[in-house]
Image (cartoon, rainbow, N blue to C red; front, top):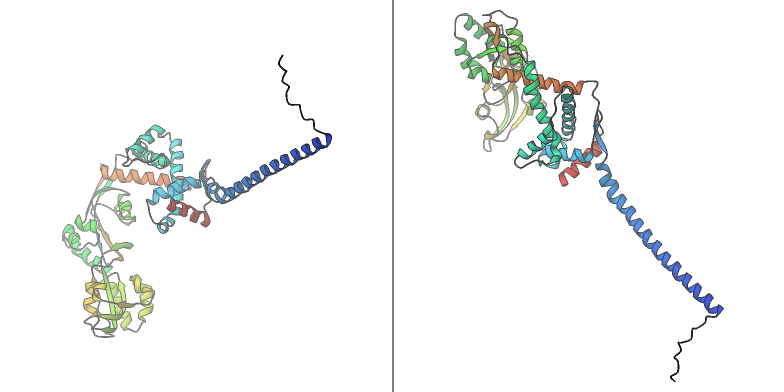
Length: 423
């Protein structure tokens, strides 16, 4: 009979051995827990560092509100996108010059949306999406607000302001020409009263390009159009307060720019070999003014004082007329022809220069005919509608019920430009 196999007898631990084993196990547990805590602490430190190195300076500012328009808020991320869009790849320096303009554009776009809604006008998201896709290349949805504002402006112009502008109104058939001085205007006015042709004289003498091209005929105009075209109400004021056939006296326009000026020059020194010269110069708006100023200089008045007061030459005005010619090609032919032939320290006669721009002159206006109710041309109606729309948009910004807040300080502007230019 085979012997029955017996298993290996169990080893019984003594109390002392059991105690030592339990202590060893506790030490291993403590080491394990300590290791885990060290890893967790390390991860916590790394996370804290990431939080402060990335979230605080990078992510958090992107979520900060920088512009509010009534109840609508725009954060830094949105502002940066608009800065990139409107600057169109400009340099960082050019972009920085646009930071305030872009903020204003964001405010205006939102005011247009809110203002249009009050008038019952809106553009759906689907319409905006289709418009975004129509561009080449298509625009991202980031620019939905820009496109929506543009679409609303077009809709308001075509559907709302079209109803605000009349189809017909009182109009005047206006003739006008712009002349350099009061004395010339009085002379031309005398010729007109003697029977000379307005169109012939305007085509020959007018210093306004439209007047010269059209030979003085501004056609039939409702009140306000010439004010829009010229930025002054001088023409409208006379035409709509005068009888048919009336011819104005010279009307001074101090802001109107013209392509003519008159130099007074004194050559102080000249190097004919290298063709350089040191000058005293003054640029004046008319031959009449130049003659009057020359008489004052001849009577003993100071050149520098009069140059600072009257000259329209920006480069020398603040220096009392001091000006250096570095080469004949660096100045107009009218100026260089005198400088390199003139006697030293002798004051020139007025030198006409048709290549320089000066301000100031005189209008002559004639009311050819009057019609109390004439259909307004499509061109003039478009101008009047555009003007009404622009005034409405400006009114939104000036409306005390609209609250727009801008939180962009210099530091935030610089931060925005850096990220817009670098992304």
